[in-house]
Image 1 (cartoon, rainbow, N blue to C red):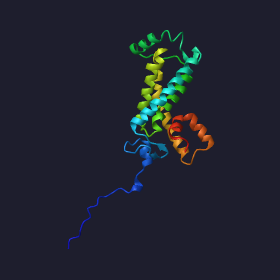
Image 2: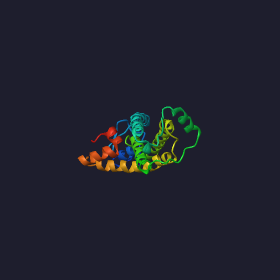
Image 3: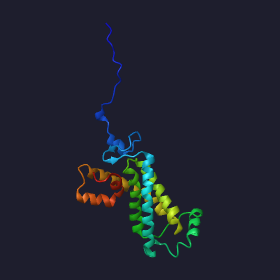
Image 4: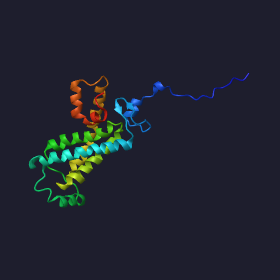
Length: 206
């Protein structure tokens, strides 16, 4: 007697799938709007466009902040507007320099900026490498486009912003997700708003 064989294929139980992890790494197969472990997933093109849109506001605010700082802090000496064209051309024709900015700007502010750039994408389901690349691109744009009208691109800023900012951003991202697991307390909401505003804008506190 011949025993009929089932032609059904082995399947992976749905319980073993972990969409939360996939969302954290930015799985491109997930449908837009998926809630993956507390992150509102967006496909690559949409999250890059949304992040660049938010960057526009950050750049304007950052430029005005540095412009209003004393020359001793910003190192933007003289009338930057009259020299803007010359400075911009020089930025693209001469190598970056080792700047003499205050250590707080170079080694505290810039890593935090890099973390902010990183988490703009990470908080929408972007992967680690993708978010690092985005942070590096934003650092270059700041140095070679926006700040170039005032001063020569900085070696420290080009390196430190993404290289130190990305690990810091990942640490902040991980901490944010851990706090979100049981719901944010009031103190945690304040902390996340300061350290990871991109997460709040992209996902809220829920």
